[in-house]
Length: 211
Image (cartoon, rainbow, N blue to C red; front, side, top):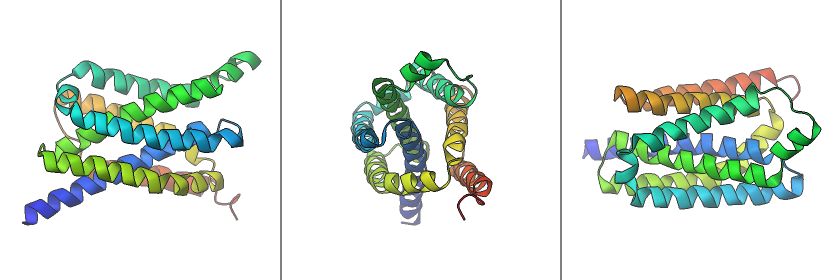
């Protein structure tokens, strides 16, 4: 019985963590759009997150045994982080093209797809029992729904959180590759510490502006 409750707690914990990071990315991308489009993109992000998690549940065995999908997912996260952290500012039309609603929406689709894969991998890293995998999907979707509005308010108050979000993408991508090539599951508490540290740094940087 203790093992059952430990597994349930672990699954809920990792899914909430991944949902926080997923929500951070959705909000960061949506903020680049005009205000009247932000809500549509966020709702789409939540819906896509739910859809891809359910699809991932049905395709769990394929995702777990396909190293190419996991590797490409990690590479996409690295590219997304590079585009928003290290790429030099583009000239007028290039910058406008990158922030076009269709481009932002495509990035939201890909980001939610990758996080859904990480969602399934995170649960299976704890247990491959179907009950836990289904629970993980449900917790992930519900958490994404309730966490996204909170993250939106937090990011408006602490703008540096946007950059820290893309730093976290490097961590998530690195974790996917590390687990794939070294066959070692990164403990959930490390992910918790990384997310907590990123949020703390962002809040610390913007503490004076928020007063």
